Image (cartoon, rainbow, N blue to C red; front, top):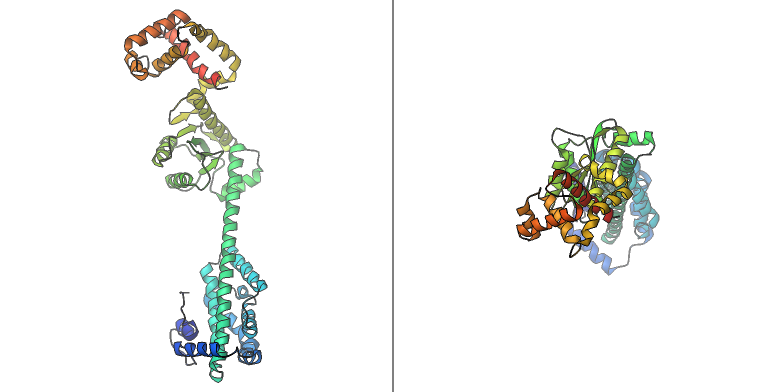
Length: 429
């Protein structure tokens, strides 16, 4: 129903039927006259108002409700006792009471739960109101202006109150529905990534969200400098991109523990690389994406998620800034992490002799770190450390003297690089 202005009392029938009906009309001139009468005289007595509206209460309400429901295309039961309450408010000269408004809110919730649009619900109520007013004004020719104005004012005040209460109930039901959906989605994500949920319930939710539990998936976990939340701008952007990329099914995009988690089917193209590009375009970086290996079934999802988290954690401890960290590439470091006591002994045995160097071990260890990062290029190492190439060569020679391992020898490089990288891990514990 379109929004109706002040002429609703005079042209409602014309709007509904498309042609004017011959009946008394309360136009602008009569409205103004009624208003002057209302201001200049006391409100008509209850008995006079009762005599004007009683015939509508006695015989017309059921017919009016049926026509309004048929026109709006909704169940007439959604009107409840609205028309009776409207007439009572007109007779008593008051607005709808708290109980009436609570009923309207409940009807708004019921309509939302039944999938009835708010516009259709309001159409029902406004259609019923103008039909009721049409019935009353059919007798208005025998009533004075102040009486008609009093009834009109009461009716339209109740319509305003009812519309507001209906909308409030409808919106409240919508919010509750969204919250239930969010809760269900959150529980589904937890069941997928942590495991241990009721299998039947997990299957039911997977079907609801279009996720193939039996399929093969890999999990990515992306972190940046700030904590991410559900429905935030990054979550929304990535979810939209992922749904479009994979056709809207068999994917999960959520936040957990402040990180963005995606469960994706493996494809010919690298989904992790595509995700990293999308995150980079969000402008929230720098990002680092941990990638688990693909596995089938619910248990595989849990395993892939744990691998992605572990890859990120190892990268953090090692000080790696790579935008994508794959679990399989971190397996050697995972071996080191399994036995921290032995690793610590190895680090002390290899790098301990550097403690006796002039200026301490830190400059020499920093030189080794840069040298390995630059693939053994002395000039590039010098530029990274803001030193001369001669200074870098001197430090490498000094390291060989103290440790017995030369960085330019394959075996010596392996031992020194392993010790330098392992040192990062044990220094973080």
